[in-house]
Amino acid sequence: MGLFITFEGIEGCGKTTQVDLAAERLRRRSLPVLVTREPGGTDLGTAVRALLLNRGERPPDAVAELFLFAAARAQHCREVIGPALAAGTIVLCDRFADATVAYQAYGRGLPLETVRFVNELSTGPLRPDRTFLFDLEPKAGLSRALTRIAHRGGGPAEDRFEGEDLAFHEAVRRGYLEEARRDPGRFRVIPAEGTVEEVAAAVGREMEDLLRERGYVL
Ligand code: T5A
Image (cartoon, rainbow, N blue to C red; front, side):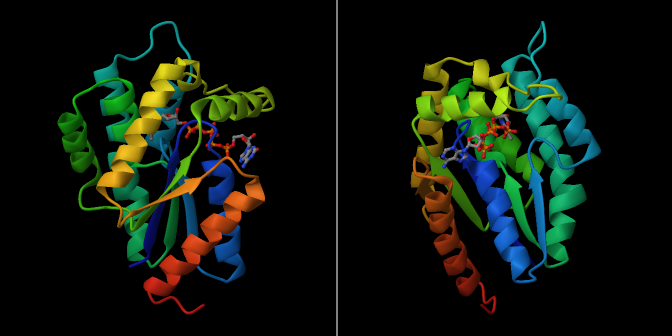
């Protein structure tokens, strides 16, 4: 079995930047790595991503949103993540089921136990070995995310969640921190206000510990 590592946090916390840097470090050591993201990672996930993240005249209802994220994840787990882990790959995933708890339960206000149940259905037996939670003030995260969107050019902005108010993003952050408190064995909370290099150094230390713990020769 490989290793399943997820990267989580509010908008603009820097997780995508850190997923790419972590993958680069692992590849330099000739370790087999797969980088993927949610929603996404499969044809179905990519189609669902457009439905969920692009602004439209009629945004999905919160329950519809929950099921769309779950549908994308069910396909992703069975078509991509599960087989990659079975082949011994280290899978780095930009967001996973904790995002559904943070956004759809804490952010949207859907019942927590219902969201957990839907998550279990969509992931089946798959659980991350480790989750890095990049913690940042929502104001700082949103300002970074909006800069990223402004520089994106070309494609769709995928900014529907960035349009939510500050209270929503604060609730999402609280949700993530609460999940980390419930499962300290899996989560590592990484302060994300530093420079890219400072945050990457913290991720690097945590990755070394995990690889050593799991018997990888370093
Ligand atoms: N969602 C997702 C749910 O509601 N439920 C779910 O179940 C799931 C899976 C997905 C959206 O869907 C929601 C949550 C999201 O709103 P996404 O594709 O994950 O969207 O996009 P975002 O989270 O919005 O990703 P961002 O790209 O905005 O944020 P990241 O990944 O946190 O940040 P990153 O690395 O792209 O960096 C953003 C900008 O900041 C700069 C980068 O260069 C970039 O410009 N940056 C830094 N600047 C200063 N200091 C640092 N340390 C920096 N690190 C990065």
